Length: 172
Image 1 (cartoon, helix red, strand yellow):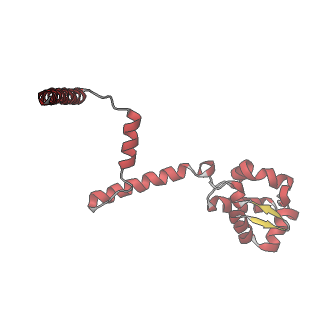
Image 2 (cartoon, one colour):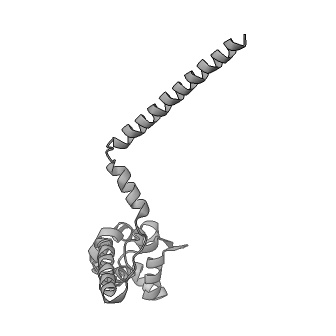
């Protein structure tokens, strides 16, 4: 009986060795096929990777760096200027006609009208600097409500000042 056991073990070991060899060959063949496969790169995925690894800032050094920094500042100023309300106009009548007329013509929310009893009285009581401050930072009190910059945060402080000065000039 012992010969049968050894014979079985011999055949079983050969079968296991054969299966291991076939498995190893299939793994190597699959690795070879995978290495030769050409993959198309998804442009959206590539752009996401580039966005993640893009530099956060820039370094400017020497004369070349100073020129590059000046160009960057000029570009940033141009971009900021394009975001200024009403094209950056300092004409108070234009800003008033586009933004302020809704409240200051009807007196809505306690807004003073463009006459001696409205804006004229406020100037006499508070002074033009206080009106400019209230128009710029906003006002909420017992005589009315004024949102900061008339509700348009894109206005510059100079535009608000020009508009208040124009309104005061119209009240006389």
